[in-house]
Length: 303
Ligand SMILES: Nc1ncnc2c1ncn2[C@@H]1O[C@H](COP(=O)(O)OP(=O)(O)OP(=O)(O)O)[C@@H](O)[C@H]1O
Ligand SMILES: [Mg+2]
Image (tube, rainbow, N blue to C red; front, side, top):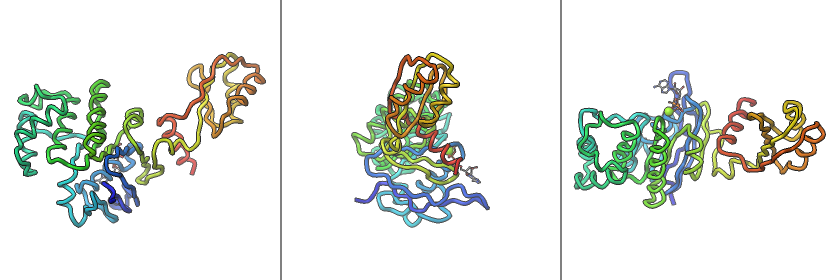
């Protein structure tokens, strides 16, 4: 089966600056794919090429097998985009804004479709209110409805929950998840909010300086790493230093956090005792996405 989204050697060069460099990845149907990376990594540029907003310098991208270079109309028909800053007409109502999008995309029975979608994103009572009166969170939800109008098979979100309060973000993630799981819509989203990505994404790619430096399902990105959190009574700095024998060590308040490639509980306990400390508590776990992300980027600096 063809991938829902396929990027093949995508590259974007501005003058002598390489914004996106030889980027390739596949997203399968119904998958939620997270695109991560620091500011300026090339996420928005990649997204803009995927949806045909800017032409790649070289390489190509495919949506349901259609080339964004050769069949841009086919691609636009299939992809809904929620941009970093959705541009609605502030003096028009939600209904009027959505109607414009519907007309642009030749949507049949637009009134019905708009009512259905506005309910889907939880804005039923707001259909005839001017968008200028909407909060950031409401605009983002309206953005989802807007992206869905043409009935796309692929949805692309550029930092959908940025600037949205925790409850609103939670609701957006629920909507995004259910679109993928229940309606088999393929989702690609960029985000800096790693705990959100961790919750809903099936697969993740980390970009840095225009390149993908890590990619895979979360379990695979953990790469056999383990985390040991230690609560210890004693001279924390001395103990932390000695624990470096086992792996990377950092202090988080009164806690020592050790990251290693194996189960190091016994060795850690012994080192603590030898350093004159008293172990008070231990928690052994797999790393979170935030921790994985940090070590992926740190490894990059070292190369
Ligand atoms: N039109 C342009 N002309 C020149 N340089 C550009 C242009 N668009 C983007 N860039 C540069 O390309 C790089 C990647 O930008 P991009 O917006 O894709 O990053 P991003 O990963 O989306 O970052 P953020 O997390 O801040 O949204 C940046 O250094 C940016 O300055
Ligand atoms: Mg961006």
